[in-house]
Length: 111
Image 1 (cartoon, rainbow, N blue to C red):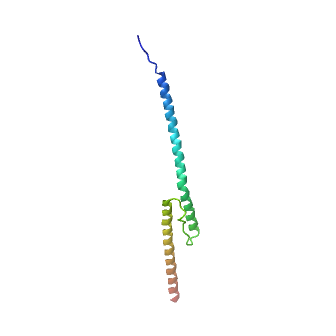
Image 2 (image 1 turned 90 degrees about the vertical axis):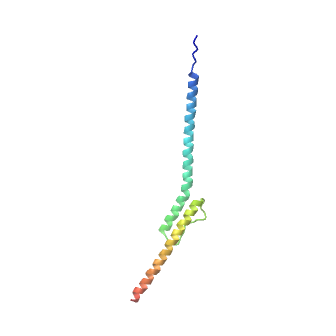
Image 3 (image 1 turned 135 degrees about the vertical axis):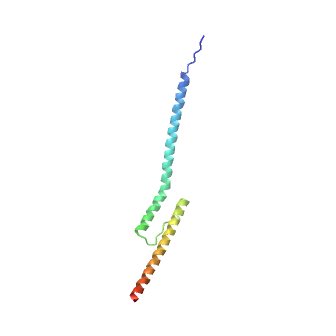
């Protein structure tokens, strides 16, 4: 007497589990991509606003500084502060060059 086990139910269950695993992987991939795009947008929005302000300063550099107080993230506030320090140094250097040029002009006019 032989006993033959039928493995068809096991194969069907294996296929079902593989399908569940594939769907779960696809769901995790889509969720990860969605969160990544959302986070990239949230992070890039304040930087984009800061870049637009910097472009306006470049177009019309008249002692205008980036707004630091209304930044949502500490890092963006620090970056704005650092940019303003560089800008302040540039304005000071510009004034020093102007006064040096005036002095040289006055000296040359005296001669």
